[in-house]
Picture 1 (tube, helix red, strand yellow):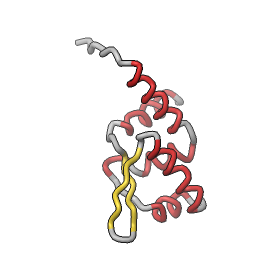
Picture 2 (cartoon, rainbow, N blue to C red; picture 1 turned 180 degrees about the vertical axis):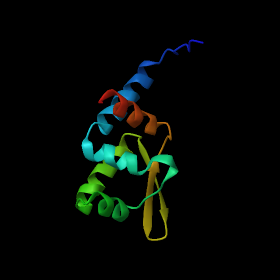
Picture 3 (cartoon, rainbow, N blue to C red; picture 1 turned 120 degrees about the vertical axis):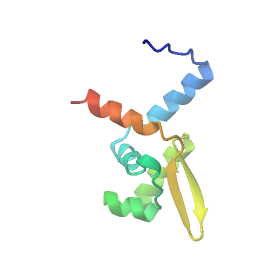
Length: 100
């Protein structure tokens, strides 16, 4: 059965473009892949896992959060980051299949 695609408004298209621009960086793709499947991580956990400077990690997290890709929640002294929409992981799957 064929799935019908729904028409997107200009606002939805602009939001999608901004999200895709935010994602379009190797380090940000790496961050998204770390946060797939509902995982929540702190800046420290992410920078240690990716072996990059904490300030660089914070910069990329800020961009992803600003563009609506990530959300965060303060828990005690730490802020945990997570994907705002679990479907974003499907974008990475698609990219992986398309770049083989």
